[in-house]
Length: 295
Image (cartoon, rainbow, N blue to C red; front, side, top):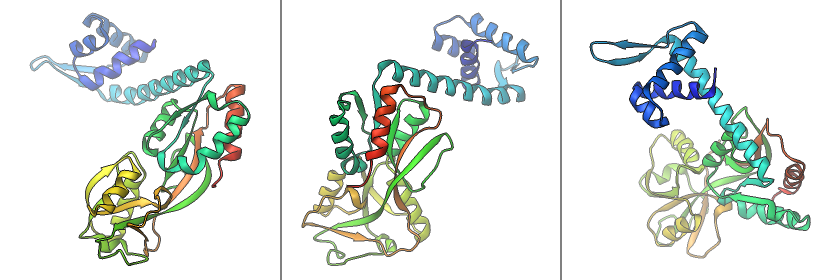
């Protein structure tokens, strides 16, 4: 059994067409057919059936079961390749979500510089949802990451760094500008501006919405906290944003929520449990663990 056979098989399950798979991998259709035949011999089963009248390819129950395992195998191989690539570069790939970076990275960078290691950091700045995917794929060595749950995936280890609250922010023309706090349900008729789906805010606002029994009117999503605040200052709508992402300004009022049992913005330092680091990468990881504390 070889890896190419598994890749051909999985693609055939997805496409159910030999010519499409052959074109995708730049091989002949007989090459795909022979790969499937080898797998059927190895597992002593039929993986596909063909309706001769309509020329339709169907995946058998055995084929469906095998594909579940093949997907896991191919995923593990991708993780292994990405991890080895990182080791070979002798660099440390660090995920940095924008909201948490201003809290943690300056202090981390100070200690890395003192140990002449800052040049070995390759920063990847994305939202926490995207960074989690990259961790699971093995593309990152470690990442700062926000979530509304402290620990989410069994393949990852989490070091809890602190918690933050989600807030509403309003401009000077808002009826809420003179308020100190607000109920989430009071935003029912408001236009909401928040972060896009790559940020934990999308999950937080869903949680608030379920508790308040209404779907908020989200009119704009961004990946930039300053853009959100500027739009709020221009009275385009009400912002939904973690407190740590806010820059103080007189034309924007920050309103914590009254709601009980509201989701929190949990801040974590995360890496794969099975990650094996080089000596230099381990030194960098230890410095990050030691110094990733709230400023």
